[in-house]
Image 1 (cartoon, rainbow, N blue to C red):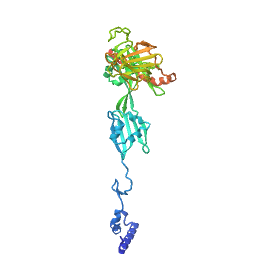
Image 2: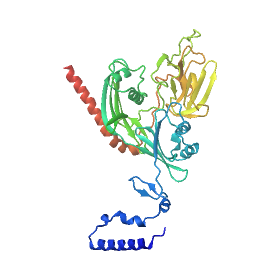
Image 3: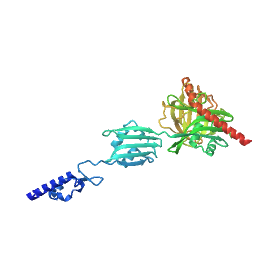
Image 4: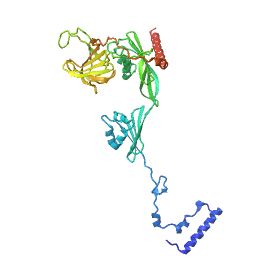
Length: 439
């Protein structure tokens, strides 16, 4: 709009006067009256052409300035029967994104999820930019979007605070009942039994008055108890004979238990291939057969156990047979080197991947207790052969496992001495207190 010449001259005069007053200091900038702009403001049509956009503090900014996207956080707990595909579908993320995650170095962990594990998602505009998988309180696997559709991954291990704890028990009835009475959890009791299982049969050898001493770790995270750590040292006195074990991690990072001289607590074979079961029929070359009622040699041991109880490979070896006959039912034969063979009969079923030619490790589950074949009830019939001759698995001399290598003996003594001394001191204190109590 064209202003009249009078108004133009007035506006020029006012502007010049205001400039003079500002220079001389009579008017400060914030005191400029807004009315002087009335005759020079832009027309409404021009104002409407100037775009504006609201911002956080109530002022205005050009609308073409980008407003940052806000990341969205969500989480999920793995349910029984869940897969990552099901969880991604529920959470609104694509199968292509899941595939990209599985191509990272830690992608396999997403195939092994289990109920109760936690998942945390971070996304922007419905696009996943970060996934945190937490299988437990001490472990996280973090997947982060890199460029385009690819992801990187990293495993984060949190180190808890470990406190040493001591426990002592005297057996009245069973190892488990005694352990429960002194506050030792069942899983730790099982670990204790596994340490000494090559020397002690915890079904037949335990007697009232047997006792044990254990030094182990309790783990805390932010002052909250989260579980039990490793057994560092232990002593078991069975029928007056003492066995001592200490945990040692070798230079390759493998941990196992040894006696104070560095001899392995392991033997080449387990005494029993079924944990905490009951012997229903012992090795007896003149046993009367329960079905045929005639004297027939029983060249193995029968372990009565509930149907489905895991059966363990007694030693490292190679499966020679995993088959079925009318008499044996489902059975497995394992060859251990040139001298030794073990047989496992009447299985309800084989463990996954157990077949002829398969190599197995000591303690690996090879099948499950059943009553197939000529069996009067659920049990495992176990045989042990040396150079083709049947031997009693409970009394045969078993070859030793490998001791601590000579080159590591000094390292072994340095790293285990303190735990052995702790165990000795704890044992002495218990004995002293028991002696004082008896006087």
